[in-house]
Length: 109
Image (tube, rainbow, N blue to C red; front, side, top):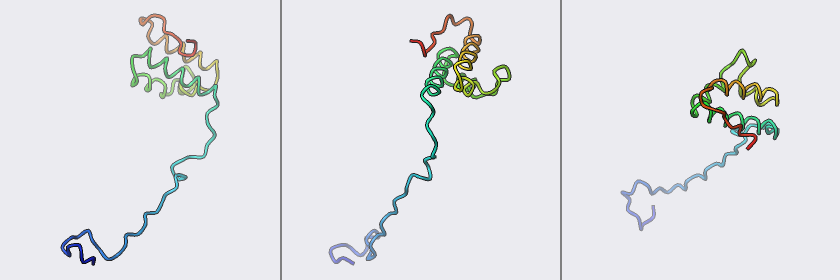
C-alpha cells in the first residue's frame, strides 16, 4: 500500500486495474447497402404526408406499418418501392382525411 494513503481507504489496492477492452461496433452495425436515393426520398415524403394529414406521429406510423390488403402490403413498403406505389399510398392517405382540405405533397414543395 502507498504509505501516503490511509489503509482504511477501500478504493486503494496494490493491484493495478486491468485496462478496459475496447469493443468494436461490428456487432451492432449491420453490413447492408444503403437505401437508394429515390427510395429514400419516397419513404421520407410519404412519412411526412402521413404525419401531416393524419394528425400526428402515432396514427401515421400505425397506418404506414400495418398490412393493407387494398394496397397489397405495408403502405410504407409499397410507397418506397416505386413511384406508382407512392401515388397509391398518397391517394389512400388523402382519402383517409377528406375533410382536412387539400394536403400538400411534401415531395413537390
